[in-house]
Length: 415
Figure (cartoon, rainbow, N blue to C red):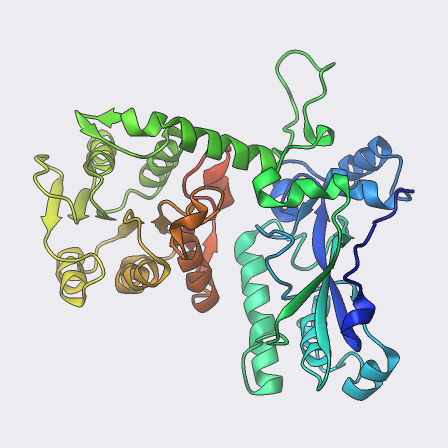
């Protein structure tokens, strides 16, 4: 078995240390999403056969994917493999049996927080090592209904707050990195992500497929980044107006409007082509009006323009006055920073009924996977939204074509 090699920076230099490893799923991406496309224990076993494992431990990186959109250096908020000196464990205590909900609730997170915040302890992450989550019917990671999964996680967070009198915050200390990344694990450094051979289609299979194969997360990210860099969206138009939306997202917009038939589509941002496209879909289904916040000079019978900044209270009140008790879909199309994205969502969220959507555009910014220098933007705004609004869940079915500028940004109100 290949073994990880380490440089001079060893755990012993940070003693007493609590060491947490990063978490991976076995499979091509987020396990719950992959299971919707047919990933199960049988497919997982086939992957193990390809690497002659799981005994060949470090080859697991060939068939694994980071839990959530992470990198080796994104910090550790939870770990399924924690190392600590016996003295530190005896001082801090072991698992708190008060976390007795199905799945263990926040027992793992709470233990890591308690160990890592103990006096005199250094918190370390061992790069090049990881724990790998298999398909086993778990209460959260293997829950394919995102609304159920999110409701359960929010319930766990509420339990933690009830038991501790505050929200979970983690150890709250600088994280020290030790170790070196083995070759097979280096692809998980974001600038070097590539799709491993284990997730490529079987070249011997010909004809029309009858069973879907899950798309690897790296392939989807590479597809998006290639589309971003080759600029096909910069030359796209609708009714003579430029638009910066990939066609696969336009198909998702069409499915949402045709399925929900909202009375109003609230669109922020200056992308006139996007507004006209959404108005055209309203024309095709013969229902709905576009409310454009931030665009000017749009001449279309199904478009009403609202003056004012998209995150301004007066603007929000004007939009609410027009929508009233009618149904609405909201498309947050401004290339905004995190705070502005959240303010916009908070302003228009009351207009979104159960079953309807808020779509956060350009969630790919700030390294997700493009434009790393953008700074905290729409993607970080979505994290804040999901952290504070348990009534919304990501609808991954709207990303089924692989290419999207809103990965994880199709937010459906579920309650």
